[in-house]
View 1 (cartoon, rainbow, N blue to C red):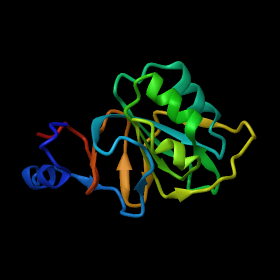
View 2 (view 1 turned 30 degrees about the horizontal axis):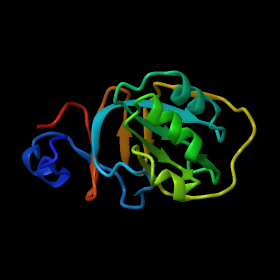
View 3 (view 1 turned 120 degrees about the vertical axis):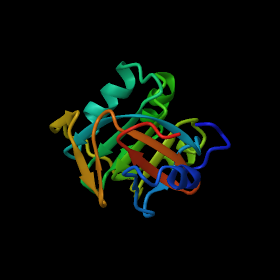
View 4 (view 1 turned 45 degrees about the vertical axis):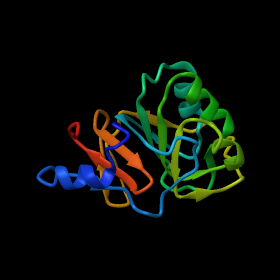
Length: 162
């Protein structure tokens, strides 16, 4: 994102496009405060195992992972997954769920939006699926969509915004 470009300006300048805004209940627990990029989606059933593999084993190329964990009360992303994300050039993680290790995650240069914190994690290896169309908190997100975030909030668009 052009650092002078703000989400508020993008909303004003693109009001003819269908822009969705993430609920203000989501907070940034990561070190990167503003970012933009293409979205890769993943739907989890409690376990973060597939997300861990993705962040650890795949090059992110500056993409943003949008994760739907159906707000299950487990810490899905912590310092280890954030370190994997940073090492493999994933720009940010937006999680419909909870995070942990936030003292450490705030020092890692990756965005991390979530609805809250939970120190408990799930140890079961449960199913997950990638490339799913996600819908939560009033937004509908697909792999390949665009996301823009800063201190004012997070916006989604089907096409790149200028």
